[in-house]
Amino acid sequence: MTAVSLRYPNAQLENDTDFLEIKVVKYEAPGFDGKSFQQRTSSESLANNIETPLAYIFLPIPENIQDSNAVDWGSNSLNGIAARAVGVAADAIGEDGIGGAIGKVFTGGANLIGGLEAAGVDGKKIQNFFAAKAVGALGFNVDAKGVVSRATGQVLNPNMELLFNNVTLRSFNFEFDLAPRDKKESETIKEMLRLFKKSMNAKKGGGLFISSPDVFKLCYKTGGKNHKFLHSFKPMALLNMSVNYTGSGTYATYDDTTPVHMKLSLSFQELNPVYSEDYDTEEGSFGVGF
Image (cartoon, rainbow, N blue to C red; front, side, top):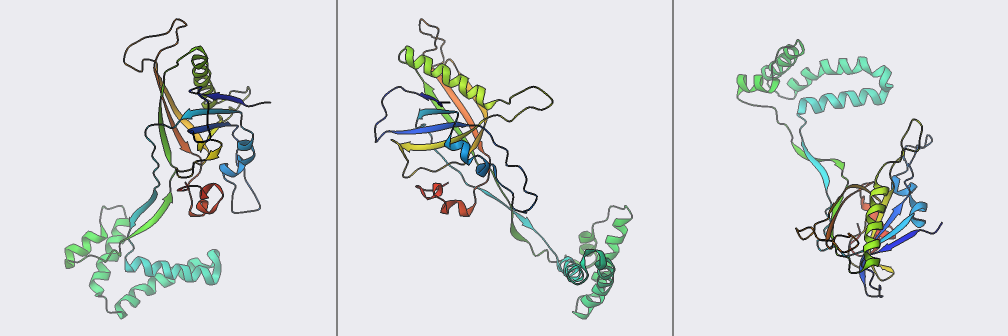
């Protein structure tokens, strides 16, 4: 089946024409691999479908082009007592496995207090700390850090550091002015809006389940080639679409009832995070990469 191809404006595309290519792609679930801890991503499962899209939409380069890369880092604390306890547990599990390590963990925890005193830590501070923990375990609202501070004017060194927490998913927002100049462009815009709406929504399909919407692969182009500078995209879901049919603030239409000025807003989010290795791939080697 030949993919639908829609282009606004209808002006001829030259070798030096910059534009945004949007492929409508049938979603393919990544599934599970019971033989590996490394699971497929949506981007990998969609590779073949991206090469055979359901439709093409060509739009002018939007006025406001931005990309934003972010990762999630957060502050984390681990005081010396907790760090030593983790070390005891890790050693025990390494020697006896999880099942046989429980007894050694408790034994190591008991020896921990003596080890701290031998290292020159004030025994009174240690007693206050563990006493507060014990009372808190009984259901009383007692803060071990506060108890130590009240008794000694000191707190355990939290050894605070900024640690990596997680990856994030990038979002992209686009706005386009649509002002048809003739009947052909009017029909193109109408088909384009219907295609976006139809593709972004779930499919009933009948039966007990509903199916995922189609997804989109975007690419900045110059003529028939990828743009040499602007960023790349991973496959994306269209989360929100809005159309203002009175783009100039006044209701006005042509004789065939087509609004003379519309504004189209699209909000996409990538299906997978960006990783460092993505910049070494073929797609990541263009321009500034992802």
